[in-house]
Amino acid sequence: MAICGRVGPLPAETNLSAMILIKTVSQLKQTLASFRRSELTIGFVPTMGALHEGHISLLQAARQENPITVVSVFVNPTQFNNAGDFEKYPQTLSQDIRLLEEAGATLLFLPSVAEMYPQGTADMEHYALGFLETVLEGAYRPGHFQGVCQVVSRLLDQVEPDHLYMGSKDYQQCMVVKKLIELKNSPVVLHTCPTRRETDGLAMSSRNLRLNAEEREKAPAIYQCLQYLQSNLQPGPLQGLTETATQNLTEAGFKVDYVAIHQADNLAPITQWDGHTRLVGLVAAYLNEVRLIDNLVLNENID
Ligand code: AMP
Image 1: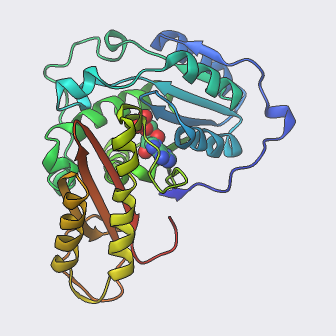
Image 2 (image 1 turned 90 degrees about the vertical axis):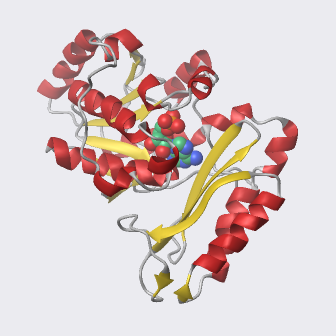
């Protein structure tokens, strides 16, 4: 996995002025073929819209390394294990278009569900993700990562990007997509970009739009919980640390799915820390109806 470089300006000659908006796969392929004939590399940022600075930072990283940047906005029904969550997923399309235009995206792909799933959503391919889909988000959101693979696989086939940009905010998703790329034997290079946060530490997320004022005030406790894990990490058993952090978050008004520490390089579970293995802390917790996730690498200053 490549890590994104620093955000910076592109040379003027690569600054294509008007963003192209495309809704069908056939138009997308036709348009991208002309760029490919000119040997221009394509950087791709898949999203579900309700865009914020975190998404835009992925686009900026893509622009730094590719003359052509494609962003998709598609709320993918097959990755929602909860119908209510899908229905309430925030949609801010006109603002998204403005943000992407201002940030200099070359092309916005805006497919419909029928365009992405022409054969429907029954009898879809199964991806052998192994233990990655049995832990953490995989355990709490059955089928979620199969749905993620359905859409990312289709988008990779449609866009055929040279570089793919994803956020480490969704740490496990990045590992799943890395596995998907291996399974597909795809030449695309995955870049994992750092999490953008609000000034109080809350990880930017489209779901933050669903928080009311009181919930928004409480929400940074998730990042504080991760910082607590980081500052209290010691060699030896890890269970006491995650139990205390879970209790703190529960007392702060959250319904906790998990506060966990796993090996950062492969997400394998770990119960005893040797003082060296890279670790990541991961949290998923509800504030009333809204489920938030976040993570922090605990023994490395990279986040
Ligand atoms: P989503 O629209 O939530 O599916 O996210 C689209 C992409 O943006 C994914 O690769 C996310 O990991 C990434 N992303 C979401 N939030 C952030 C953030 N706060 N900072 C950086 N990247 C993010």
